[in-house]
Length: 427
Ligand SMILES: [Zn+2]
Image (cartoon, rainbow, N blue to C red; front, side, top):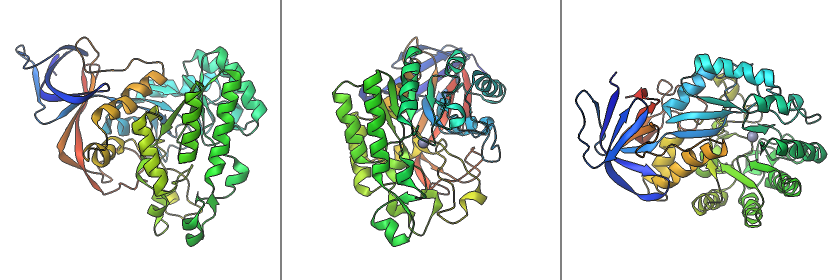
């Protein structure tokens, strides 16, 4: 492979510019050495014809379930990282709800050791807030911090006891650690399997009311306001919950939040004939929620887009709607699906996509963004809007294919992913 790579004739996407400028990009050994109109490429440069393509900073996902250790039948760190690359993602934060749950420095290290051997992209492991995610005692937070966790979270569950959470916040604040909160009042969710409302009544499926999420989210932010800790609200689904976050942000509370592609794109009506590819927790809400969440993303209420990539085996997802596990995969599909539904249609631009799925997720993880600028690191993707992507089982790199996009064909394709001077993907 050539040391020099010449990206010729692409249009550059940036978080702070709605306009895509047509410029050549010259990369040498992992660095962007020149960005200009019609670069004179030196001899021996490898040419990537980017005519008609978009060159964008590579994406970063702060909410991923890699299932290793414990459920390697669903996903491994290796297959998860390959799914990420396939989706234009070159870094991610793994959730700690594995078997065992990652609640000590030693366990964090064991995951990082696997990642160092098996993953072609860097991985950050988050740690639990409470031991074993049981909600009773604080996990080994200091030890996990020393191993570099950027975030602590009991994701999959909320921290039910407010006093335990308050202590966790006071403690985490000393380490400047973010607490990422899955918001749910378990007593209200009960055995619910989808959003509670007319559709759940019609289908005869027990419901999870939106207030289960809204009450917990409100409580968590109030505790953050009281303790001065930094909280990040995960996978917001309800417009009313989002409005709560908007209000607290306006008051200056240190709260950030995320929205998933599926909570923007889908709602309870998509469940149709009990399709378990639309079962996740928190659940898909209503079409009105879709519209208001999308508007909030455009308004800047949501700091980041994150997939909540949650692989499950076909066997599990093939069971009846109430018994099937919550969650869908997202790494392979997120960028193309967001392009297809929102960028191509002019609802928002590449600038929003870059800001919310590349730059801000890195900042949230205490990393520098990777803009395509002279002197910057070459961590970028080439995206061809004129090609299509069909999400067949073979195309996707995740070990699981529990996604509503299975066998769908969408506009746009990621044709190259570059990191550290190397092609991670080149179609
Ligand atoms: Zn969650």
